[in-house]
Amino acid sequence: MSDVERLFRTYNEQLVRYLTRRLGDRDWAEEVAQETFIRALRQDTIVNERAWLFAVATNLVRDEARKDARRRRHLSLLAEEEKGKVVESEQTTLERAQEAALARRAVDALAERDRLALLMREEGLDYSEIAEALELSPGSVGTTLSRARRRLVESYEALQREREAREKNAAS
Amino acid sequence: MQHPDEGMIHTWLDGELPTEESVAMETHVATCKRCAAAVAEARGFVAGASRIVSALDIVPRGVIPVPRPRQKAWYASPQFRAAAAVLVVAGASLLVVKKESQTQLVPAPVNAPLAERAETRSVQASTRNSTATLASPAPAVEDRAKSVVPVAASSGALAKVAALATEKARQNAAEKASPVDAAARRDEVERGDQKDALSDKVAGVVLTGVATATAQGTAKTFEQRKASDVANPRIAATGIVVSEPRLIRVDSTKAPRQSFYATASGATLVLTEIEAPDFAARGVSEAAPAPARKRMGAPRNAPTTTRIMSPPSAPVPDPMIPFPAGAASQAAAKANINTITWFDATGLRRYILSGSVPVAELETAKVFLQKAQR
Image 1 (cartoon, helix red, strand yellow):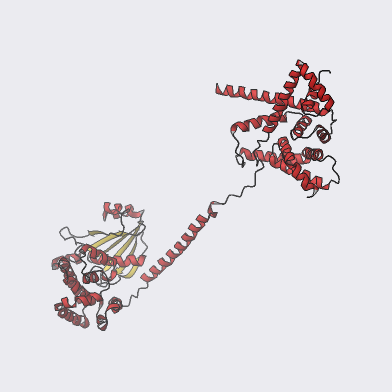
Image 2 (image 1 turned 45 degrees about the vertical axis):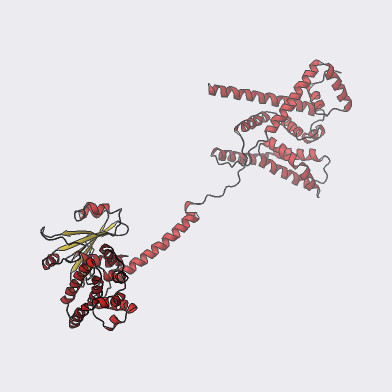
């Protein structure tokens, strides 16, 4: 088994999940993950594999040119969605869909670094890996994560209250 | 130990503190209520954040839609193609058949004696079952009369009608009498005495309907026989000169197309073709009013029998009895113009056939014309 194959088998699932949470689009996430493993092929030595993969994936997402292309694509997709032409292969209940929408809004409200740190942590990356991937000092990861978690939860709860109030108004 | 900050609490909860610091933290939190509350809150945030992040996994897959197959045009479906193919074949067949039927009608050998053509057919038919009639190539009229006699003799009510028909056939033949015909008629009279003995043999000569059925002893009603007669032009309207009406000319300059035919008996028949929208405009409904309209949905082959231009006193020819029995009635029938109407298979075209011949002869002509139109 080649190194890349091993890397793929070991980290693909985590990486795709992280990217999906980050991007809100599994197809896009899979595409970025694949691109990440292709980059790994060209890399001679990788000291900390997981940190390197997450860092490269994060940088790929950050890549403005790609982002713009994706955004354009995403916008056209949204337009398609408007027309009701999106093919949804997974059945999602309305409630779960609403929950996901709130979570997305709350996560998007976080600062980029907080968000990435949190998502990486959720994928099991340790503090040193997160620090390496995000080029942070190891001592600041705890603070970053604590801030991210608090803000995320508070933001989510605020959005929830907002929605409940809106539903109440609509009902009355 | 100092009260740990939120970042350190999260680091501790995440198991990222070095062992020594972790033990110290544990000891402090156990004794410090404020820090214990902060740790409890932090646990809530960790769990809450984790749950919220997990909710992000509910992502509709295929936000980037797979390229959908281009919708096929409505005319590209296999069903439509099959239907179109059938229509094309059917249409082409119809054209060919129509063209053939037209060419059959028009170039009908105008110079050829009709009786001769009928005779030929009669002989051809006879050869199938009997060589007796083949040996004497008598005119078709005579041949038919012979065939009818034994049939008529075999059953009561039928006998009377058939005898009338035979008589009429003889008269028709006599009109164009030739020495051969006369000889044949004399021969026929003689044979009439032996009709019972002959019946089985002669029944074999006649190919269709009446004779065959009678020979087999089947008791058909006259209506049934008449229906089968009409269906079979060869013996249609028993006793009438059976031959195709000959097209003389077609007048298509007027809106309702009119075709003029000559019958074997020399009478002229006029066939008027009227398209559906013209029915009312042409006042055709006067000739055959309500029943004709109703028949649009009913079987369309049943003819409407009407008489026009006849004096009120003149007897209406009974379609059940093809020929009036008395000489006076015959004269009246000759003087009058009878008319029959029918619709084609689509019900959109109406035909009116009229002529100074008995209705039964019109019916016979109709069968030929319908055949030609098909």
